Image 1 (cartoon, helix red, strand yellow):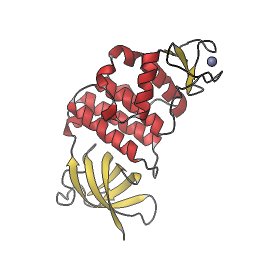
Image 2 (cartoon, rainbow, N blue to C red; image 1 turned 120 degrees about the horizontal axis):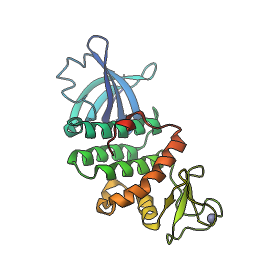
Image 3 (cartoon, rainbow, N blue to C red; image 1 turned 30 degrees about the vertical axis):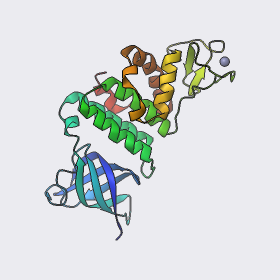
Length: 248
Ligand SMILES: [Zn+2]
């Protein structure tokens, strides 16, 4: 049986049978996979602390032979991200980011940029800063990587280029903005100003390290949040189960 080694983030773990573990994980090169760790509940040698929730792990696994399950052979911990499991707020946020990743990236859909996004966001949460900024950035970037980028370049109705000079209106049904000549703001179609639009544009296209989080003030996040919220609700057709536990 061919085995493969991938960097992986552990997304879900549950007991399976008497001594095994069923593990869902997101890899750099194979997308999201589910595997069985034989004796995983007891084997400290093969899986030493590396199957805990949210761990970054180098996993060795056998390619699937039947069904969708892979067989986990061994693992080596790269980063435990223990801080994510240490309090309710960080645990809730990490669970939320994981759930959004699962929705946007079903099994077998691979994107190294999405893996980097999840890994870098976990690292940023563990540093304990900018929780609100991490969440809005993750949402905007993950939706883009999942194929739902918000079009901020031109009016979705008349096609006029948005020069970034005035207010625009986000239209959830169009997944983009409209000019004030074409559309009026409403609860479903919130207004967005030029600074917020420009930062949203950057968050959609740039990795976390290129984002100057000090620019993401509470006021700007409050302006961007309704746009991203309406966009996610409309495109995903649901709100996320873990979102009810978020405290921001
Ligand atoms: Zn227009």
